[in-house]
Image (cartoon, rainbow, N blue to C red; front, side, top):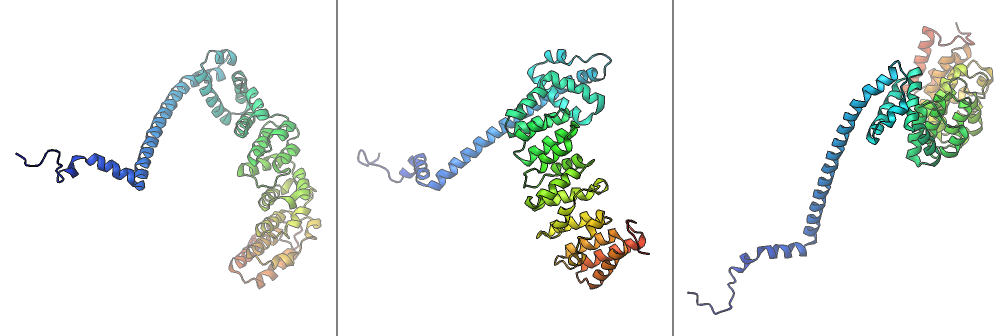
Length: 365
């Protein structure tokens, strides 16, 4: 029998009597442990939510894929069948999910098909209410709704009037580019002027790759209006935008006619190295124009502090390939000390000996 008096405590057993209580006290008293437990719980909750959403999204994709597999044959039968497709009658029999999936299928086909097939599918877009919804979103939607709406209208080749686009779709370079592409695909009568105004009017930011491609398409048949805008506004543009327009001018030289190129010549004096390079390269296609050649200080370009600018100058002189240009090229090549610029000068001279790139104004034998 124990001889301990009643009510005494065995201190040797106390550390093992309530470990949980001591652990809880230790955690509560240590802020690092508290933060670690909270973080672990938060990460576990995030993982559970993420996995749950992933599972739901996968199920949704599979359901939509199954619906698409059911709709695709019916869509193609109506598109290529001998009878009237009766888009409205068919759409009226579809559920909301089926109509949503059908819109996705329609977008895919419109990106691939042209001509009569695309015109027939435009009737399906009308039955789904896509065109009306897109026009409404152009006027009242947020940025993303406008971009989506403009994309649909471009696919349907049914752009709103330029005044509407100018009033609602100039907030970002992306909107401007998609609006101009919609005009271009719609073959609008004023696509050149309206498209240029949308893309570069009162814009200082550079265009996206899509915007550059759209601008080239818009002005390809007649770049004169772009050149007029550049002559008036080029100095207000960001250097990157100016360089993009110079790039387009270089590729439009075969149809430029008597357009004003003074802004290209002025760009030769830009403090931006890249701008000077693009201007020199652009002038390579216009060396036959006396009014341009007489305004270019070839000696200053051949002594530019930038080796890259000098190299571009040598290539342009080789492209002109007349006696005066080649004399300047030989003189500059003899004085050049930078290796890469020397290579550019040598290549320009060798290319001329193999066969002049152009016979315009050629007096060299």
